[in-house]
Amino acid sequence: MGRNISLQEAGNRWVKSSLRSYLEGEKNLKWIAGILKGMGRDQIQSLFDSLGRPGTAERKAELLEWLNRADTPRKTK
Image (cartoon, rainbow, N blue to C red; front, top):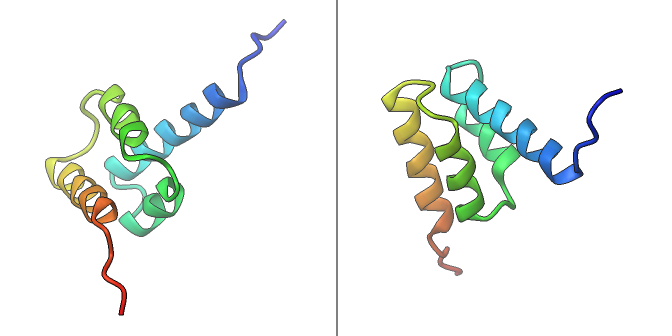
């Protein structure tokens, strides 16, 4: 019989798989940003760090830049 996993664990696996797809060049920043939108920066960083070293330095830098921009409060007009 299969192992029961929590909804949280299943969600984390899906996000990690999505991050890996982005980092390996299979998906673009807009796609991964849509998946990560609404997640906390610390949670994203933890999942990102747990992946090890997939992808290129450019992809990692692009994602970290997006995280920093997403973390910056927006000015309202």
